[in-house]
Length: 578
Image (cartoon, rainbow, N blue to C red; front, side, top):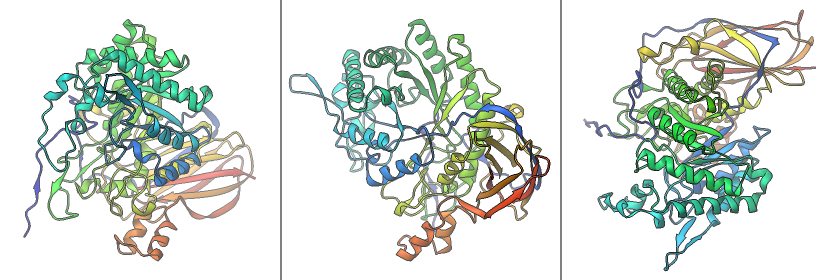
């Protein structure tokens, strides 16, 4: 009988030191109550204002995978889901290296110094990545990071790394996180980067980009002092604006625990009158402990752990309120440019079985719930979330359904998560008043207890200018291990309709619909699928209709129906005027 061992607790990227009431991951509770009945009402005549399409943003670590054939194809797929384009945020653009990307590491390899110490720049890798983003109809969120090898300070040599066949050098192991030795040369690098982008893509495109300094400087991504970072921001923002006077610059992209770092950053930018057009930070719903288990391949988790939507809401709300402490910044958009149920992106089901949710229908339904809750939070706070970035792309050379946080798995198969974004794409320009009597309200979450979000049925409804109504309704609980053989019966009433005749379309994401993972399991979970098996899986990977389109006639401006929702599931009902 084999013995399962685990690694000791370690730091986790994206999770800072914190004193919040929430554990790093939520435990399971087999005795938690279920929701079996819900009433949903939508008032098509009650315009709740323009909807902020906060989900139209993705990011990832592997800069060099942007321009692979798979990366380009995935970017084009997202391009089909948007009219304005996503903001795309890759890491590591200024890191030095050969251009060979591996999970959680990549390089733009821009900055170099010749034998006499004179700087020069190489944008060949940057051009490939940014071209792929722009050609797919998207816009770059330029993360200006990290320190190139030729700009390392002398004290970066203090970082000790044990030589290993799996470690390249101290630079890749973390020297890139030290502040640059020469802030003037850093500023020149930033200005040269901005100038090159302006020349290649033109002002009309580049003015849509966001320019952000660094990533999570409140943890080990920054091996300097907070003040050194604040000073670097002053240099960086002014360097960007010297080339692009209309550029949108911001930061500091702290973790969900970076409260004091954020406060110090905003005090500095205010006192120095630095350009600041957005404020960015991150939130993660879980960090499983341990990161990695060592035991039989595909073995069970040492403890059943889960993401927590309540934890994410708490971290976002707390940082929005830090920004609100500065009246000068109330109008600035908040960019949550890593907004994820779990961390890190490149760890998988085989590292810790709790990552299994990243393969299943649980994840897209969680994402629908999260985006709606963040929109609700905007109604409560002075500062508004403008983007909530899924830090997900794809991972090269993984097994089928490895369980990483990604939109694709091996063989170019689309995972269920991607269908959440297809559903979002159907939402209209205006939000409608909508309620569910089985929803969890963000205004009533008991943060003091540190509990995760229990089971709910909730709704998000929108209207298009042509009168099309979209109703997104879901059943979900944060506990990925919860099962229920009983489906929830949800009555839906849409009032205030102007027309009498509509085409009703009904899409569904659950274990049996829009779910390539289920199809893969049905054909035997092959790691060497035949062409026939691969075709069968891909045939069911997109957003699927639960039933054929129906022609309906409304009575007195009201449409009613009943849907049954397994746990978890999301239905998208769209009423198209005839």
